[in-house]
Image 1 (cartoon, rainbow, N blue to C red):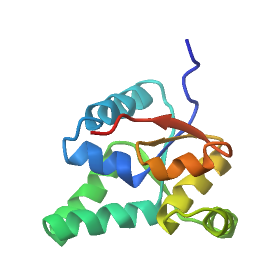
Image 2: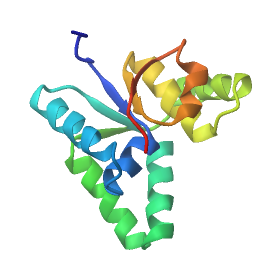
Image 3: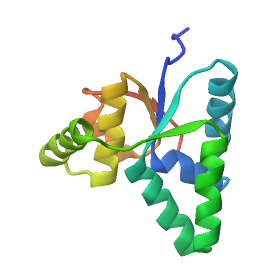
Length: 139
């Protein structure tokens, strides 16, 4: 049996799956609950939080998007403010791979925190040699 991750970084894909009740959303809910039970740090880049915000705002409203971000905090997810070290690493990933800049921030944060990135976004296959990924099943 594989060791439990000591730190988790949540990608936008995972959070949207959670809020949209997609098949992987149940696994995300379980990971969040277990992390809180075991005092496993949960992280997300503010860049990815912004991406979650605009997705929710487009689908519903800015007020609902604000409520979602507040709920993420209540779930124990800490937001990393993307200081230069993270921003530079995200730029390195972006310069080498065809991936969104927001995804590059999630990967950079996972690398810096020595964390497992929680995602189902296949775009991250490009960096799976650089970071640890906890893959979620898609559709």
